[in-house]
Structures are given as C-alpha cells and as structure tokens.
Length: 154
Image (cartoon, rainbow, N blue to C red; front, side, top):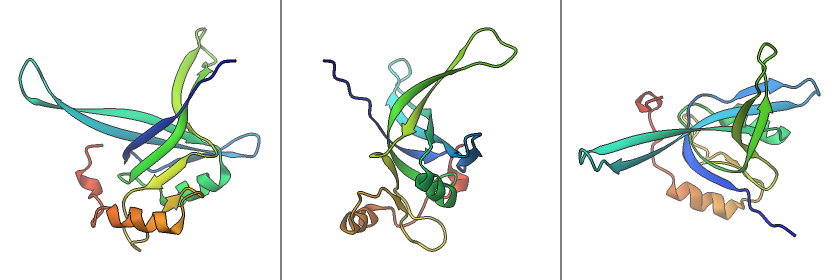
C-alpha cells in the first residue's frame, strides 16, 4: 500500500481580484493569483535580492466561490490551504499538450484573510472549522492597518 501527502500552505497577497467563471456543467470556478515574497543576500554582490513567486489557486466549492467573490480583492493578505494539481490542456490549433500546475482548494482546506478589508473593519474568514475564539486570536494578530494596495508592486 502506498501513502502520499499532497498539501500546500501559502501566505501571500492577491495579485488581482478573484475571477469567477461559469462552467458548462452549471457550476462555477474561482481563480486567484497569489504572490509570495522572499529575500536573500547575493553571494556575488553581497546585496539583498527580493524574489516574488506567483501561484495559481482554483476552487470549485460553491460556498467558497461566493465568499471569494465578496472579499477577495487585489492586495489582500491571505493564507491558503490546498493541494497541488497538474492538469493537461491543449489549444485547438496546437499538436502538443500544455500543462498547468495550480493549488486546488478542496473540502478540508480553505482561505483565511489575514488582514482587515477596507471599509467595515470585520475580519473575513473562509474556514468553517475555525471557531469564534480562533477568529478573535487571529484578529488580535492582524495588522492594525491594511496594506495600501497602491504600494504593492503588482
């Protein structure tokens, strides 16, 4: 019997508002692009180098799609809990297939907003397993002011 673990956890900023598309089956899909940043000191120059990595995130969960449509805006700081999925697709006029690896949000995973939205100041949480006490702890650790979206480099 084989065993594997396919789990991804990210903390990053949304690069754009969520996009929601309707499927021919009648369902909906939400797509997000999340940027994670890291920095290191270059051995050649001794200077700090900042690197941004972009991640595609997708979900088909109807309740999560509704929540994302309401709250997922460019610049929001989010925690993502999902799994990696690679899908194959091709364009009608091309012979070779294309591949896309993305993070799939499935039941048991989810999205948590780590900052307060502009406006009403309420903390938005999209994880049904998160208790009210956890939300209060998360709210206490959240930045007092949301990041200025104009200062984000994307």
